[in-house]
Length: 222
Ligand SMILES: [Zn+2]
View (cartoon, rainbow, N blue to C red):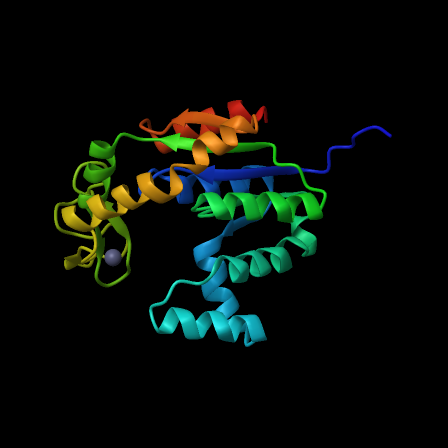
């Protein structure tokens, strides 16, 4: 039987602040397939009132980690939905080697073959600059950046005219450094794992959002 290609199945990975969330949202628009962000899915599942959702919510509310089996169960429910039949973009998962192996098992069970695992590569110092420079309007939440996205008029929000801004408390050097160290220790080992499976595609994530999007399209051949 010919191997009929059903859709495009992609994992976007990379260090925190590499831009994978932004790229996943744009890719979703271009390909018309869902963007599965595990962070958003966990929050959404917590609100469904399902048995799994209630367990997840209890864990998150107490500040505990959600065990891999629960994330996998949630993912399994999600990819069975109709809108995932032509593919999906996975963002924020797998975060560890055991999660990568569990994902492989799940996809095998569902007869799904990944097309690519795209690693968006950005040097640590650029990630630091991106995160430490960001701030937002207090009134409308519009995001800005000290260097890359200044308001048109100094100190005035483009969107709502607000004049008060804030920075997220965890956008500080120590927290970002810790996140990068965690990424290297826990998530980075998934990179050689996917490379061995022949799925890894690396994309330089230092250019403009549009330039990075073009590079993603070209590695996917779309
Ligand atoms: Zn505003």
